[in-house]
Image 1 (tube, rainbow, N blue to C red):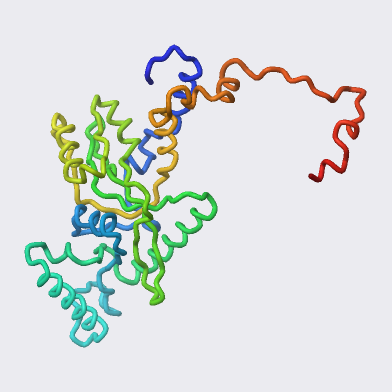
Image 2 (cartoon, one colour):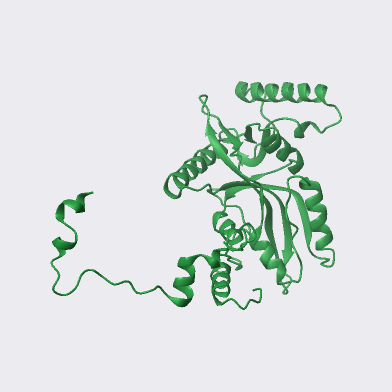
Length: 307
């Protein structure tokens, strides 16, 4: 906590710190995929995903592994007698070939608008519908977006050597149900944010998490972070670890806002009249027009109560 001679600012800072959960219960410090409300994206490149989703504003779809044939617990490639699987494989191959002809220098699986997951296709679609429903409920009930596509992770360790993973950059997203029944991922237009609890946690190790800047981009951000943790031989930046999940990011945005950096001089949060009154001097007494012998209707007529 920064030193200050202002008692109100000191109290605001103490309350502000409570917004940060630095325990290992916080999924932003100790991320483990949710079996019901999370997806792990595999074989994709964070830089390409960011470009397609944020910069180009494209809608992305998800692709799972083919469901195993009934009665065969260990699936391999789709059988030649499976017409649906063959048609899907043919369509995917044609799209990849078209993408390759347009840009042969880029890996094929980074040029399409599909995000590959490690889920079976039927499980994937059920998960997407559940996640979309929960995201809509959170938006309706809380008025905030809690669904994010997280790009990159930091593998960090406590002093006992146990490893944990913390997602690094958070892209606010929405899942949209198409007329065909397919679910597509889109960027909500909100700012891409970095991991505020991780910044505070790294402070305990005398390390400073870089601040993400859209102008600098992902590559420079990840390089700065790699430079920051260079003294920690058992830590590593995993730029292409991508996951979709729910994160309570809004209270951490409040943490930044209450820091006062974005507020003009003389109008910092701790300088607000109500906060000063509540946390320091109290409110001035106000003489009440109502006493023990006062007839209340004389002070406020019944007709005025309906206004």
